[in-house]
Length: 580
Image (tube, rainbow, N blue to C red; front, top):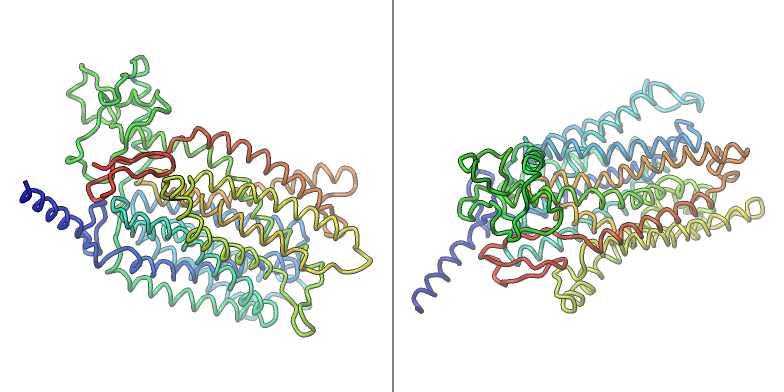
């Protein structure tokens, strides 16, 4: 008996040397755990993300100022232009994520899209230095510059479409979820990812924005282009350390097959015992993990019912689906209402780089006699809020809560998101109160920009809960074959939020303009942004109630763990995942 136990331990130890999560190394072999993945690989990913986010936030934070002062757009048009660009930038990942998951793989898509991104940055440099493309002649907008500028930033949007969702999912793929220690590190990875992004936001919205405002946009563009080029080379050099997930074909095809199979068997009754539903044996699975049966959306279970008269057609996926495929379809359908109720988070974040910045331009920006704060740099305060709250949450709050709740994450993903959404309501209330006070003293004295610090700081704390939680949710709660698409769905929350913000501005302008005084007019001092912020606060509060209702009955993904998950039962987000 003792000899058998020793042999089993030796076998398990030998198995743990290799990664069995359907990934391969750069030569297409089974990855060796000690030399691939985890932090040694994700460090390259984080550095690459750091440089890209500096570029993005430098443009995003200061874009409304450039559009109003250099291209001479009015406030309403400039705000909509920023929202359209930010929306496009965060919706393009839906296309890039799909192509990567289905056909190219994450690494190839990252390299290709980074080259496109660099093309956009290069065109941005040309629009600042080539005489015929330079911004102004006699302080008048130049059509050639405007065309070149918008072509450059939308080329960057195209590059972001493949870069952003694939890089984050590629980084998370460096951790084996069936290995307990690596699974814990993956949870920290999302917090460290957001920490890196916010540190990049801090530098982009302060140092680079300062160069844009007080040196030139051309010099700033040159700096971020060189940085992006160097980190692209470094990321490619890290190839031997990565674990690669192979593209699995069109991820929507199995979902469609489940729906067709369930409709075909609509007249059958679901068995009371889920064990009677069809599933492939663990040893026969070609790739991916098996999911356990859940009780929600029972109609879809009919797709896994084995029909005696069609028993020879088990290979026909349009008539018989496995429990895992059925559960993956349930996951996708469950994501939809969560995505819809998360959109107000994107609407709230859209104000930080548009109307909040425009507020700052009317305030006293002098910090000292010799230093004036660039308005767009205020977004760095939100980054500071994240940089302070994330380490406290990850290193202090999570360990304490995990001991109390038995949940590896401390609290469930959706509960974390709901806390962030609560802070979003507080942000809009604070913004409304500050703007109302500013309007009352217009013409008497100039209000200090320090009054905007609280709403930006609270916004940062909100993001450390809501946006980081949404990243975890859309990576963890989608099928394994759709993780780049999952990260794209997270980004689309911000993208659609920007479009919704533009839509709300149009509607509000149309409705309030009938009375002769628009809430968001050409001049911010004649506008009533405080009322617009109160409206957003009410919308966010109502949406929070809907989100809490959905979260109260949500069923999380249940994965059948392998032998390397040595703790037996591990509770995560209220669901026990049993080791096999």
